[in-house]
Amino acid sequence: MSDSHDPSGAAPAGRPSRGDKRRKPKGPKKATPDYLEKAALHYLERYASSRANLRRVLLGKVERSARAHGTDRDDGAQAVEQLLDRLGRAGYLDDTAYARGRAISLHRAGHGAQAIWMKLRQKGIDEDTARAALETLQEEADTPELAAALRYARKRRIGPYRAPEQQAANIDRDMAALARKGFSLDLARQVVQCDDLETLEQEAGAQPGPLG
Image 1 (tube, helix red, strand yellow):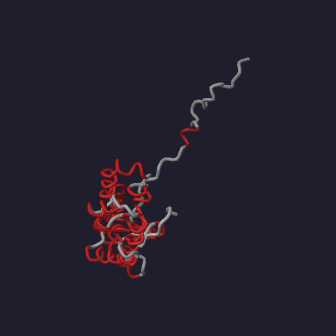
Image 2: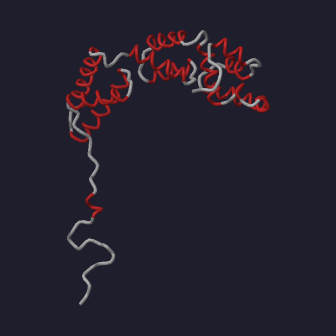
Image 3: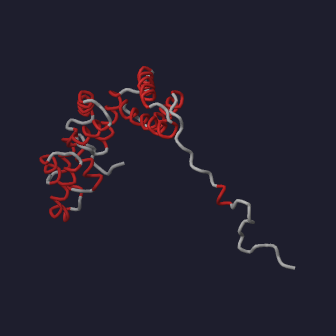
């Protein structure tokens, strides 16, 4: 009598294998007003956002819905604008508060004013609001650019935070690193070539010692 068991483990003919039971990825959902509102609130629960940035997110869903389901793009765009207006009135969207918080966060991470300006503009913040946000950085330190540059240099252990025997050989490299973060050449030189770090930190209002 032959053994009916197949040692290969293959499924009998006509029956789906386990691999066939994998779920197919779900396609885009229809961009109805209700769905867009739920998607917007879910996004805002996870991320701070400007009005323009959230508009881009939602219009992406409108576009994918139009391709998958044939929904009308203009109707979707109108629904997005109406939703953004409601979210603004309800306090979920506030570009002034967003720009201020984002500027402070980027400053604390060691970004220069130019880099902060560019990042705010990329998020759809208008020039006046971005400029006002940068002005709030004066509350962070007496000289916010210097404080941010020192914070970045300390984090990367470059410039005056290198071992003394390594500083001279890395001046150009460290100045370039600061320039890439949006700091001016003069400020980069002031940080990298300083000979009294403690005094410079006091001038900037930065707290000496390792980063937390």
